[in-house]
Length: 62
Image (cartoon, rainbow, N blue to C red; front, side, top):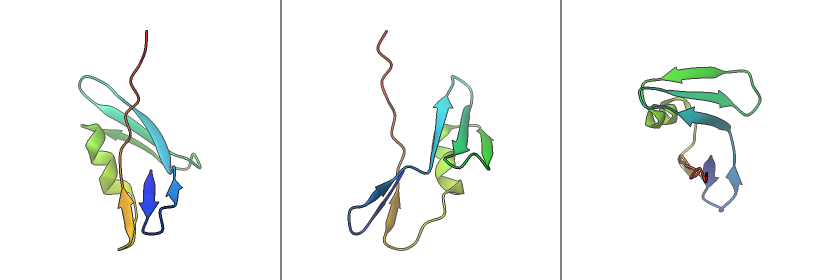
């Protein structure tokens, strides 16, 4: 997810974090990433000076 200086938020991908790795796919489905840690996904997000990339984790409710 990225947020611009004007407050507009866009989801640019989704993923899953596992005990020893993480996976991310872009929202358009063109790129997939297998990562050592979920936070590494931020390295693959292109952004400008007024854009803040962020990870959002959802809590699973069993």
